[in-house]
Amino acid sequence: MEIKGLDYNTQREKLVMPEYGREVQKMVEVAIGLPTKEERMLCAQSIIRLMESKNPQVRDGNDFKQTLWDHLYLMSHKQLDIDWPYDVSEAERIMAKPEPMAHPTKDNQAHLRHYGRLMTEVFEKLKTMPEGPERDELVYITANQMKRDLMTWSHGSVDDEKVADDLVRFTDGVIQLDLSTLNLGRVQAITGNEPKRNKKRK
Image (cartoon, rainbow, N blue to C red; front, side, top):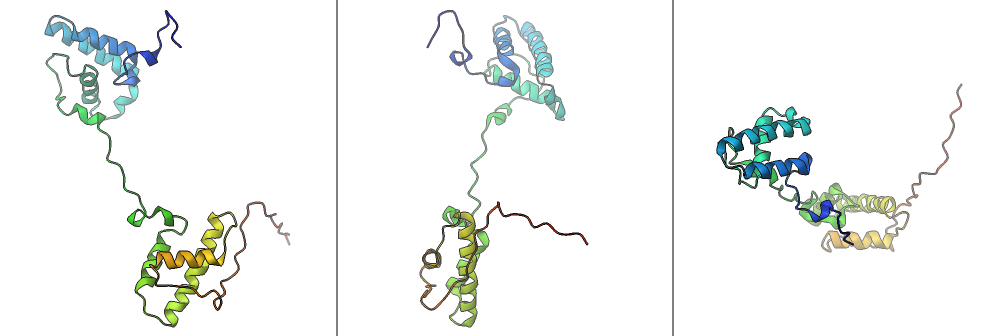
């Protein structure tokens, strides 16, 4: 709803540097419109001093003067015609956005996050291991660890069929559990409400 006579920030032009406030932005616009380069330079120097007082943390940097003049250049939309005391040709790097980061999991496998990176490496190892007692032992250890992981992240909802299905899927069908002959260990749900045992002092 728009009320006559009221001026909201949401209705105004977006500030290039919000940390300095709208009044400083207006001063920059005034400086752009001054008739001589000398007047514009004097006004720019006054604006820089005001910017420094309004944003004192900028002084923490070693080249804070350069930063202030870069900010002024950006706030003027490159239209302030003065003899710049600092090189502002790379000022726009301040506004550059960083490149998006890749997902930290291997091959962006977010569906494996409840098993973790180490379990992913075990799945890869099982794909290439030859059949035999050593692989059977690793399969048994892996399946029980998967069951513990599922119990931890699924709030107690877990069964052996889910473990077997995941193991087949994540080893590309190489490992197939026979649950009729292989009994996985029992996993107890972990809760945060278990009473603490008081140790008696001797």
